[in-house]
Amino acid sequence: MITPEEIKQQCLKWWKEVLHATLDGVSFFPRDIPRIGKVQTKNILSNLGHYKIAIDILSEYDKSKKGYGYAVKWEERSFDKIGKNTVPVAITIESLEDYLKITGKSKDYQYFKDSTQLIISTIPKLKDWLYANLHHVIEHRSWSDALKVCTYFLENPKPNLYIRQLPINVHTKYIKPENEALFRSLLDFLVPEHINTEEKQFEKRYHLKYAEPLIRIRFLDRSLSPMSATSDISIPLSEFKLYSCACKNILVTENQMNFLTLPQVKDTIALWSGGGFNVSYLKHVTWLGDKQFYYWGDIDAHGFQILNQFRSYFKNTKALMMDQITLDAYSDQVGKGAKNKAESLSELLPEEQLLYDLIRKGDIRLEQEKIDQGYVENAIFQNPSLMYAS
Figure: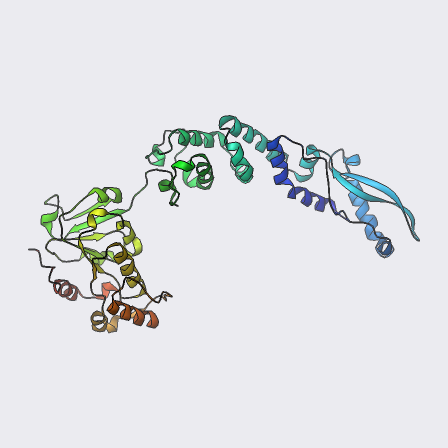
């Protein structure tokens, strides 16, 4: 026999359908509760006490007694050996008001109704968005502010401003981080033709300014510096793309301290884009295309992966101190590296692939910081195109 709590749980399963009906302006009720549990003749003798208790509880919350809630249809039936008994044969939720009483959803429903009226009256096309985003409607508690944001982006789909610069009367953290998921959903729906669909970062996706990666440049030949007194500068990635340097060579290192301690080299600059796989920031910088690159990373699986990645951007890349000679010279400094499943890296030279196989199978790691400065300078200047800058 079904219980009042089970009736409530069944009603809660209808919640989404009730909200959809509200959006459509149609009535969802009356609605019968399915599978209420029948009183079986064969079991009634052994479970008579249980049935009577269950029926009494069900009757106690019947709408005819409470004035609201579920309505039970009762019938008198005859049972062998025990005679006539009144049993429930159907349970109906007759109205929306009854449903809201049973589920305790009155406040949520009223908020949903008020919010959807505001949303549709302000931006009618959002009615289609509402059907798939019922949870957002109820969970978000400041729709007047959200609609200000939506209206702004409809009028200015490519702001090119920082979020805090947007001329919208909402507090600076309202859009992000507090409601990022909501606005991703809304803006993807409202301005699909204007978004950068391949971008996951919020600011990039919706044409907003953001705290860009900084590209750090060390002028290993000070004559290349735009300011004679400056040998080390950092500039935003977007400005770095517009910058151009008359250098011939560019050194890139995996770790920052090694970048900072590179020696003076003629016609050469060093770049630091944040280390590791952040070399990807340099991928679309066109003025770098004709430079001779030298990449120096750790002798471990990740180091060779980064070299492989970097060389896929710039084919003219030579590896520095990522060889068997260096590994042998510092064999006493070798540690345990991270495991890597990639067996072959397409951009590695044959000798690099052999070393990569060795370190991958042996979980070998030689960090570049453990290589002496004297060794570093000798290795750099063994390259004919790299000469000391006086």
